[in-house]
Length: 84
View 1 (tube, helix red, strand yellow):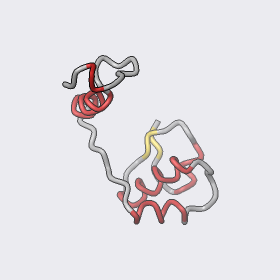
View 2 (tube, rainbow, N blue to C red):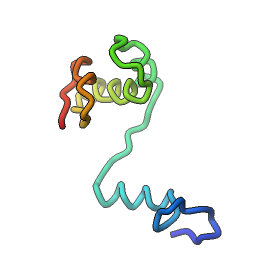
View 3 (cartoon, rainbow, N blue to C red):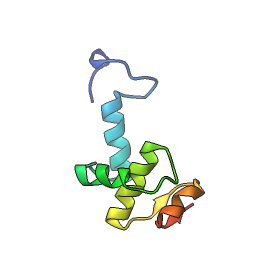
């Protein structure tokens, strides 16, 4: 863990980088890289949803055949399984 001198903690119990790593490890969450293929696929989606972050999530889910955990019912219109 880094010391306080490394920068502000923004109200977290440790430095943000360390906190994120701890949370990901605790919940066994893998971070999926965003590559050029995902970025291009997001731009080719139908104009159902305007939020660029949601479009990246949908493109990633479609390419990997993963469900999406969301309360946003619009995302189901992209042909992905929505879990909520």
